[in-house]
Amino acid sequence: MKNTFFLKIFSASVALIIMITTIILVINFHIIHSNYKKTTTKNLSNILEVFNVNIAEHLENNTIVELNDLLSDISQSTGVRFTIIKNDGQIIAESDKDYLKMENHNNRPEIIQAMQNKTGIASRYSSSLNAEMLYIAKPIFKNDKLIAVTRVSYLLRDIKEITDNIFLNVLKFGVILVFISLLLVYWFSKSLSKPIKKLVNSSKKIAKGDFNAKVLLKNTDEFGFLAQNFNLMIDKLNSQMQELNNQKNELNNIITSINEPLCVINNNGEIILCNKSFQDFMLNCTSDLSHYWEAIKSPEIKEFIRKTYQDEKIQTLELKIDNNYYLAKVSKVLSKNETIFIFYNITELKALEQVKKDLIENVSHELRTPLTAINGFLESLDFEKQENVEIINIIKRNTLRLINLTQDLLVLSKLEHSVIAEKHNVNINNLIEQIKKMFVKAMSEKKIDFIVNTSSDEIIVYANEYELEQLIINLLQNALQYTEKGYIKLEIILQNTNNLVLRVSDSGIGIPTKDLDRIFERFYVVNKSRSKKHSGTGLGLSIVKHIILQYNGKINVQSEEAKGTTFEISLPIIK
Figure 1 (cartoon, rainbow, N blue to C red):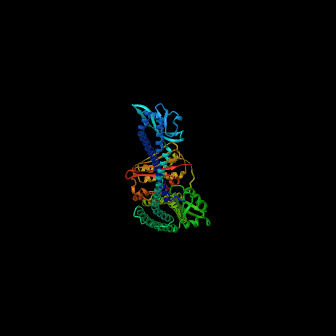
Figure 2 (tube, rainbow, N blue to C red):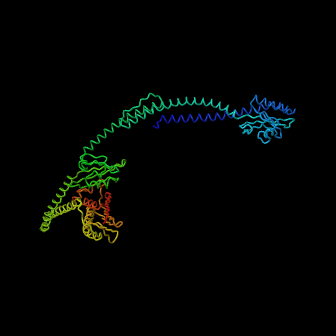
Figure 3 (cartoon, rainbow, N blue to C red):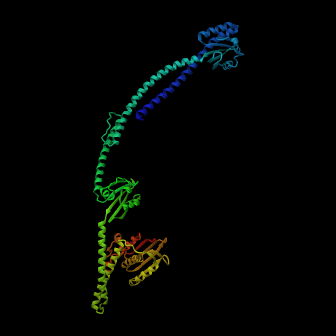
């Protein structure tokens, strides 16, 4: 049987009524018994007071026989046993027994109390009558001298029978009262549980998805108010569920319309959502398994998911699956411990990049050969004729600029496509000495102090010497191009034996704040007029950025206009 609200309140009320009624009956029985016993004791005491005068006269006249007859008559009429005891404890008169055969009563508690001029009262078992008795004793004095003690005895059985009859009547009344109370409690429990039952049934229907299950109550009390609020809640819930269903359908339509494979995996590795593109491309055709390692057919995808789905970071990674390239984006839904995977097909972009790379390399190679030839023939021309000198210098300067540009394009193309360069131990100090020689003349012509500081006399790192050389040269060329006076400082620091810090600072014109975010873009020039004056290609800092990316390094730029610029590069150098 279900432990319903009705049973709870009904059983609790019944238990409470029975408990209270039982306590009341027990207390009443005890009070009735105690009061009746007190009343009987008082009545017996009054009887003794009345008869003690006559008894005293018989004792004074020494009419013991007549006294015994008197006591027998009184006992028969009242149902009370009388006993006369002398002050020495000897019985001289008895209403029910032969007093001559009775023992000395000097040790009885009620007798001892009476001899002390008190009303003696005691209850005990009487061996002579074989019953529980109530004894009351009073002293008899003559000329202020105790001459005897009168004692009456009353069967406690009689008191119990009377009180039991009274208690039985009270019990009958109590049973009737309990029955009436139970009927009232049953009615009250039913009336109280009925609206609650309706609310429970409606809530069950709502839990099963029936949002039209309203509660109809005519109550004007709190239950009626609760039913009204419950119905309002159902209306709002129904409206919200419809809105959620619409949003869910809209979201499913959006996900289905996405051409890129998309799936959501929970913290247990189960695929809880995926679109058709993911099903068609990634999943086994006959697979109905929920775990990604069982359902996904591509080992590359499974390995990628295994490494990333429990990572809280947002990640983007490029994957090659068969002959296709995918850009996989991983994002975490922390509130639900779910991971979203989207795979963008970038095969065509990769093909365009390859075309661009091939174009740059082919054009650079095609340009470099004729430009080198032109530069060689220019050097062989006759510079003695003054009118040709200026023209030849202009041609030579622009030819060198085109050569540098093609060279930088080749370097940048190689870096962008992650061509792995051979690494070996490089002596940074020796490399700096070689680079220093390349800039001494240009620095002295502009009267710029060239300061070089290294953290030790010998710094050995595991890297590609050409890439480090390109990195430092491009930073120094950039500083030289935008510095007219003052200094250029190069600092080399090896931290913790595996982190190389390069710092190039100058006292040049500085970089405006608005341009700081764009200086690493190819061909981006902060000061175009200065760029035209000097032979820079606009690719130097782009080369620097890609070399740093090759080493998973970091670069920080601090600059203030008219005060100078500082580039700080941190490269993790690990074998």
